[in-house]
Each structure stands twice: as structure tokens, then as C-alpha cells.
Length: 347
Image (cartoon, rainbow, N blue to C red; front, side, top):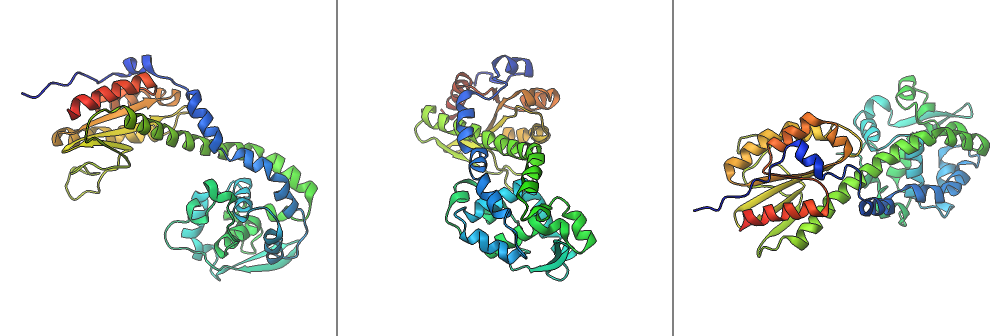
């Protein structure tokens, strides 16, 4: 006879009793190490020093970047944040490149005089991501050359709003830094006005970092505390036969963490949101279908749910709790409960 698992399901009120609601200090400290803000502040004078020198065209600016000690990718990151023009917007430019630059070049004005820049790599195939630009993590301070793709993006970020094509200039209206080249006083004023935007962008980056850290923390905790011989713990894993639809031909569903032993599988989803957003709504929308497929296959699914923002979406949280075999909050004591659930099932 099969051993009956204890009931690890909780409703939202039960879950709230154990929730942290705000980021634990150990995660916040780790995220601070990953923050880009200290690096931006440390190198701001170098960045302003380059832009503060008067140049007659974009090629002269590239020469200045080459001879400065500032890493080329870090210079590009400064521009992206200052212009409030990140990966998502750059991807839109890449997708709509023929409409924005039908001639394959950027015709712009500098100090009222016409100039132009011939694109060398844009548009790229696939997605134009931060990873493709090498403007994330340790790569920011690496000894990467000012390659052709970086030059293409820099040209857009600096002179986009000064494009001679009116439609292009409107689409790239935030790319206005070229108006302040060679004028250190105006540059400093412009940057002060942009601080609120920089704060918003880097806050989003901080939230993503914390979310990734929470997932890694859970995985490491499980690796140390799931004491079952033969148990395999991996991130971004799939469950056999579980797809985005209820048909075998559907795309395999990827879960934050998957714990398995033999033919037994436990899917784990981690969500910690201090500020409210739509991520938890998306997870709730998927919860019922996932639960039904997983239940039918004889597997289990568990959720680690926490954060004041998530608890503001009560209906979404309740839907997830209803369609979960185990629901815990984010703390060591709660993760201990999760380990007990996993061990009972895998045994």
C-alpha cells in the first residue's frame, strides 16, 4: 500500500502567517554586490570626460572611447541607462530597422550640420540582447574592444533624436545625448534631470537580481538538505510529458527547479515580489493546467511564494495555493517544510 503524504497545501491566510513579506537581509546583501549603481557612480566622471570633449562627427567620438581607460562596454551601458533605452527598446529598433533606416545608415544633425553613420552590424539576426552586446555582469569591466555592433548602438543612442528622418527622430526621441556633446555644464544638468530615470531602471535590475538570488538560494538549500540517495536537483528543468498544453505535442514546460529520483518528479516555482506586478498573475493563469497535467502523471508541484507585492494579488495567490501539492513561504524554516514534503514523496 502506498504511504499517504501529509497535507502540505495551505490557503493564503495560512501562508501569510509564515511569510517574510520583505527581502531577508542575507539576500539583500548579496544583491547589493551585484548592483551596477556603485560602478556607474565610480566611473561617471570618466564617462562625462569623454562626452564633454567637442567632436565633429561620430567617428571622432569612437576614437576618444578607444584611447580612454574606460571599458568600452561600460561606456555603452552608461549610455543605455542615461537614455533610458535598454534591451527591450533596442530589440524594437532591430525588428523595425528597415522602416527606421531604409538607406542602411543614420543621417543626423550635429551642431546644426548634417552628418551620417553607416551601420555595420545592425540589424542582427535573432534578438538584440544585453548578452549579445556584452553589457551585463563582469563583462562590463572586461577588456572588450569597441566592436562594430557597439558602435552601431552608440550611434543610435547619441544621435537618434537628431535623425534627419522625422519619423526616426520621433521614435528615437529619448536618444538625445548628442545635443550635449562638448558641453560639460549642460551634460551635468541633463544627467541630474535623468537621475529619476536611472533610479527606475536600476531598480528593475535590482528586482531581477533578487529574484534570481531567491531561486539560487532555494536550490542550494535543497542540495544541502534533501537527504535522499539518488535525488537530482536542477534549475530550469522539465517533467516528462508535461507541456504548455495538455497535448503530448506541446512545448515542454520549464520550471524554476526540478527535483527527481527515478521516475518521481517534483516541480518547484519560486516567486518573491516586494512590489506588485503581473508575474504572479501569469503564474496563477498557468497553475490549474499545470496542476492537472502533473497530478495525472503522478508527479508533484510546489510553490515558494512570498513578498508584500504577491500578497496584494490575493486572488492569484489563492488560485496557486489551490493548485499546488505544497505551498511554503521564503525562510529557512519554511524551506525545511518543503524538504520534508520532497523527501516523503521521493521515498
